[in-house]
Length: 516
Image (cartoon, rainbow, N blue to C red; front, top):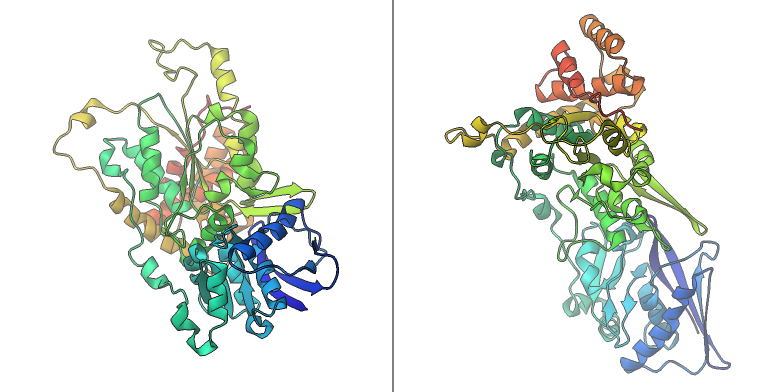
């Protein structure tokens, strides 16, 4: 007897369909799996045998051969328990092959016959829809994740016996046995922004720092904050999620696909609705930061896709670790190469860094700072010049003024008020960049600047003066134009003005941050 079942797999965050072919023939009892797969995938055979037995079904005393096609694709880390079990059941004539035409099956089996969730369901169901699959049979815990994809039926099952009962029911009555999963996507996206515990109204003073945060959020610019301990750098960073623009449906599905592959979707949440905010500790490894492992998985920079990666005490991460960020910041993706192939993950995020000006943190206050010049240079040299060049904004956060701390009647601007301006600026960018593939001002390449950021004669003269007197690099020149464009958008201006360029220039790299 022969059967064929469709299942799905992911490579990076790209999904593809696999055909699981099962054949039971006479011969010595044995179980063989072929199809260019890793050793751990072959363990599925024993799990399937025990799971079926504990479900009250004995595997036949015959030669069982399972093939995963296409055979030329290396397969690693793919859970194929449920498709293999269904293939055996069809060969044993407990299920019918015709009921599985244009049906995808995915899931892991426990030894007691229960069906357990697997990673990567969202991109797998998206691929299944594109390939004309009409029904996906998934673990119960994965059904809402799969049901987010519109235009395809998704049914969640808890055990192998429940799957048999469902498929043995007449087709017109199956929905009464197990109703298909439904997710109201519009309801998910209405009123989705829940905010965070940190709000700008809780930060006293620091108006210039708040302005820099607003610019970074509106244009998706990378930013580095320096200043002594206790000035509010971390507090400002944790206010960032409250002022970021909401994700579009397409952005949300991109981020959710990464989280699905990583197995990091929150319990009960089929999609990621708010922009991610991740703050890894400086003891993190390179593989955890950018992704990797024997079976490559997304790292923190990919989980922060379309959101914020906050790296506090930036020099403590170490130069080698920080230099791993250079290529993802430039290309907006990270590629991990293994013998089995290349794995690519998206990584378009705002890098928000914070550091002290010296090892003790109190430079240039010589009454409190005891660091030598060589110690300061050695400390700051942990951040390389090329990484510093990828920062659009540099902000020195001073100590708060006592008048700001003791002002009782003054009401600070809330994150909601700032966010409304950010959203208006993002709408202007959306209109400007329509059909160009660009989302934010920070994404513009040098050729895009000429097209989308025309400068008048006075503005060109202003920029020429700044360029010649400061000795800035070409990258810094382009950075000032991008930041100035965001400032103009926040002010509702169609064109970049001189004051926008001067304000953008004020966020230049400080002289003591030379980089290594």
